[in-house]
Length: 381
Image (tube, rainbow, N blue to C red; front, side, top):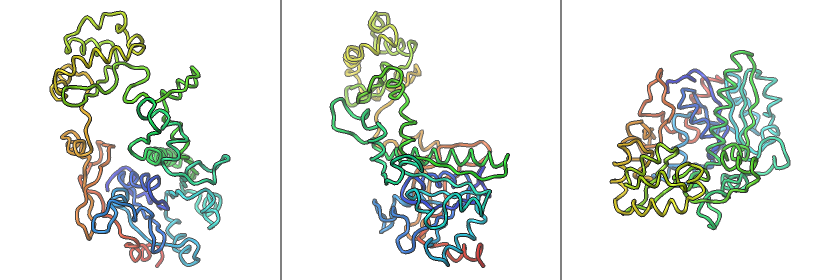
């Protein structure tokens, strides 16, 4: 891929989701990524479904455009190969349990002495410090411990996981941000840097309104379904045939909404004439709005509200979302090639840049150790 990170070499010592998501973004931004995998086993996610002809769609969706070589970093011969690759690398990304790479001779201190310009990024469940640093973690563990599940779901429902692996993905994103900041710093200092990202830290970082309520008011937020805790109307409402999301986030938008629903008197009423008043009377407001919304279909209401630029929309399933003309127009479904299954569709890159084309194809999907001969010839021979 052409992009702002072109000519940078990333050594990818990651597996499953956090690290591969980070290195996938770096690849989409133009970096060359060499994925180091365990011999015979490879990335754990090669065994995760769904499968297409015995190949993991999960793995393929995260590792397009990367090169694969299998190395055992406990083996002296393989370590020599790894050192040769690392000597020419700009970035090393890993998501092993803290201390694992140090045992193999590749902790930050050791690597920094050999390769002082290398940017070294570690993403782990709990980070490199603190009482929990040596414990393993998966996405759902940090969703729970980070407070996210306590504010997700319907009131009084059982604990509910967010429907995507946001614990992993946010850590992958923050690791990418840290790497790009370190690249800029290296331009000024000529030195590499160590980046330590914790999945749990990332969950705390994205709690926004919930953490603000607790730290400022000592309130412990609870699940509210689709409702926003401090903006109204800002939730899902029943219509004649399904649901509609309405996010009228200020008084002007609420006035427009009332006019469309033919209840202009509601806007001037004492219970609803300001956002703070509406937030205190959400239940009453919902009953009034749904009484009107139940008279038309979701699509009918969406068309009416879009004319007045009221933020609204239907609730799509994944098929609807992927096939949405807006999503297609933004090139958010792209293709990568696998030598056995052929073209494989996957999510595109949401970062659009004026200087670089957002191609509708990504690099090929690697089989385990597929690029060994090429990499050995380039870095070792």
